[in-house]
Length: 184
Image (cartoon, rainbow, N blue to C red):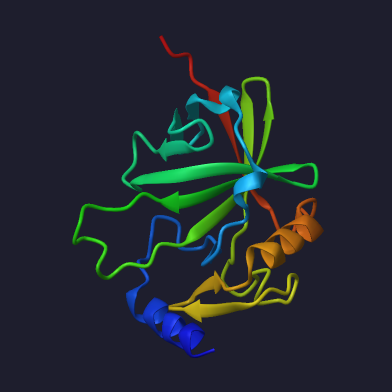
């Protein structure tokens, strides 16, 4: 309990704002090592209306995700299945030594569907006044840090929550479409 209180205080004072402040993030991942899946078909560049993502293989079980035209940095990304749904767990790559002194990285989850050369991404977001945590649509242990929710549940609790709401358009209602870029 004492460690949890200290961690919450640290998060409150040190949390970076990030590129997507409405995204719900978590102290814990949504996968265990034996639940990771690797989909080679995701590798390459995917372009959306407002952004593009580049997936590169890291080690045969994870990806390096960057936004080539943006400034959100790079993410260590793992895929896992929860029920019949495919999720990405994004975790910021470590900054250069010394730059991470005042930052506590968190996991962010994205539900994805890939059909041919099209990827649909759905984000778990907490929008002001109507967020899924704020309205009680989903119940999950969390803290609010500078207006941002940070989930504090275990991996098992997070997976159960995501499984219960993965098909709920009110929970995963912000969706973007990306198309595979023709790479030469």
